[in-house]
Length: 157
Image 1 (cartoon, rainbow, N blue to C red):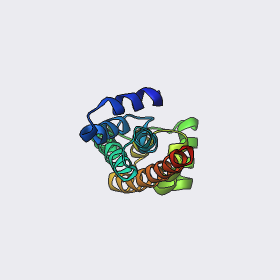
Image 2: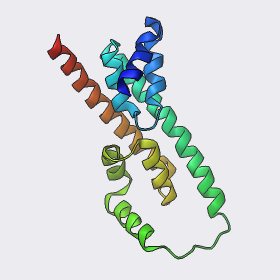
Image 3: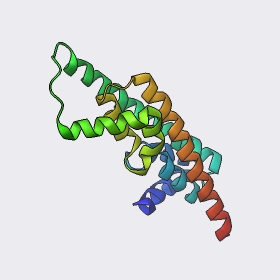
Image 4: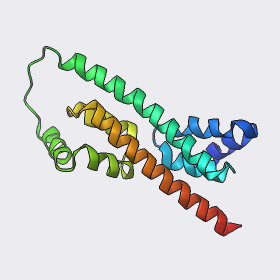
């Protein structure tokens, strides 16, 4: 999959390769970390690849967060709270243990940022806190993977 994304990015005119990185980083499960790697491997300057990957992932994340917040607000409005199931209680306990910051920073090892952000919103986390911590996480993960890809490419040359 990464190879086909790299081919897509490389096939664009050189002035638009950053746009290809931005678009692929908006795809859940690609996120900023794989988007930055694809950009670096496609020959995009590492700083541009990382920035484009971060922007693409953030834009996608914002769409998911605002949609989840809107849906949760409408569903929760005027509804009495229902009894929590054991499974949901366990998920909630994990969320309560790590909080928005912990889930945002560790979440990409398990699920894409879009899915973890929707899950946190469903647990009642503040939309603004989710956005802040997810952006911090996206920048950290995108930068780390972009730098590692750059170091790997420079070792091969």
